[in-house]
Each structure stands twice: as C-alpha cells, then as structure tokens.
Amino acid sequence: MTIKNRNILIITGIILSSVLFLLGVFLFVLCLINFDKVSRLLPVYNGKLWGWFVPFNSIWVSMGAGLFLGLGGIVSSLFVVNLFQKTQTSEISFYVLFSVFSVLEVFRMVFPFQALYTLSPDLLLSVSRILLFSRILGMLALAGTGIFSSQSNSSQTGKIISSIIAISFFFALYIPFDTGMWTECLIHKPGYLSMFFVLYALCVGAAFFSFYCSTEAQTSGEFRKAAWGILFLFLGYLGLLLTSSLVIVCIAVVFYVLGTVLLLRGIHRYYLWN
Image (cartoon, rainbow, N blue to C red):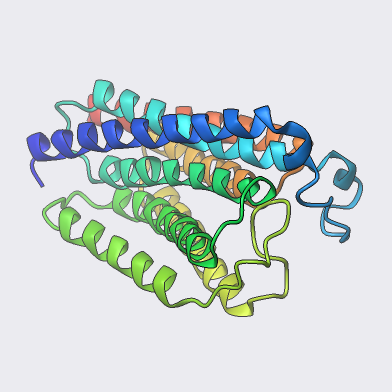
C-alpha cells in the first residue's frame, strides 16, 4: 500500500466516521429529550461483577462511552494524517483501522430507543452484529499494530487488513444472538454465550502477544514507550466497552488518551530519528 493510497483511505474513513458520529450525537440528544423513559428502560445490573462500583452504573455512562470512542477515533485519525502524512509505516495503518472502526460504537445509541418505540428484532440483531464486528476488528487491529511494529516489510499490509476485516465479519455474522440479552452496559450478560467470551479472550490474547513482540523485538527507547502505549490503549478500550460504571469509564478514558499519546508520539519519534 503506497503512502498516497493510505492517506486517501484514512481521509475517506475520517469523513465517513464523522457522519456516523454526528448520527450518534443526534440519537443521544433524542434520548436526552426523553430522559425519564430511557432511564427506566434497563435496571441496574444486580450481579456482583463490579462490586462496590455497581451503584455508579448507568445506561447514560455507557452511551457516553460510545460517543467518546467515536470522537476519539476521529481525533486520533486526524493526528495520524498530520504526523505521518509522508511516513511509510505499517503500524499506523493498523492503528487507523482500529480508530476508524471504533466509531461504530455509536450504534449502541439504538438500544435505548426500545423505551420509546417498538424496535424490530431484525434491527436489534443487525446492530448487535455491527457492534460485535467493530469490537473483534478492534482487538485484531490492535494486535496487528504491535506485531507489525517489529517488521519493516509493508508490502502485505493491505492484504492483511482485508483479511482482518473478513475474519471479523465472518465471526460477527455467524455468532448467534438473542437480542433481548443485553445488560445496561450494552453487552451480553456473563454466561449467556460462552463462545462469545472465548472468542473475545482470543482477541485479547492476540493483543497482549503483540505487545510482548513489540517490546522485545525493538531496542529503541521511543519504541518501548509506544509499546506501553499499546497496552494502555488496549486497557482503556476494554474499559469503555465492558462497563457502564462512571468510575471505571473515567479511568478508562485516562488510559485511552494516555495510550494514544504514547503510541503515536513513540512511533513518530522512532521513524523521525531512524
């Protein structure tokens, strides 16, 4: 993939992501207008998964986390265009793949409309599959960011990205869904689909493995900072996906921003000085 083609794809992704983000903001505003009805839609999760964090759970926190992921994906992609406009680097292609498709999290704004309208199961199923697709792809893309940080060959980047998209689409299409089994976090209740969690665990393992590779394979101090950035970004991303606790989401936002800064600055300085 040439630098010119990569930049064109990034700009196209930013434009499409911005449109989706504005749609998410519009849906969020509609929910705010009907605050009381939406607030009564899903009860506070009565399990013990988050312990004393449970009283801080809210569907509004989960919706805000989705909007933050959308905004974060757009802003970080804009920084990539500015910092790497003339730099050929495989890692950045995978990072942009993660950033652009994380904007699909704004589709979680659809679920609260069950309190206002009768939504068809087909619509809920489609949204469920879109969210699962973006989450699997995000994990695989973060893994690719780390794995390709230890390699200089970028000739196969386009093919590998296409393969990641195809694999994510395949899993999202064929994993069965019960559209009524969402918690207030807008994720499936623990224990509902063991296959879902096994698949997610595999993606998590791939991301950690990529972090290990990028840390051990490079001796550059800046690149080691970028490797830590991958880990912080991954932890922040998981926190924004898997909880509706205000406390955890605030911590996840800090990790997400810190990881993004460390990753982009580390990669930029590494290629600037080498």
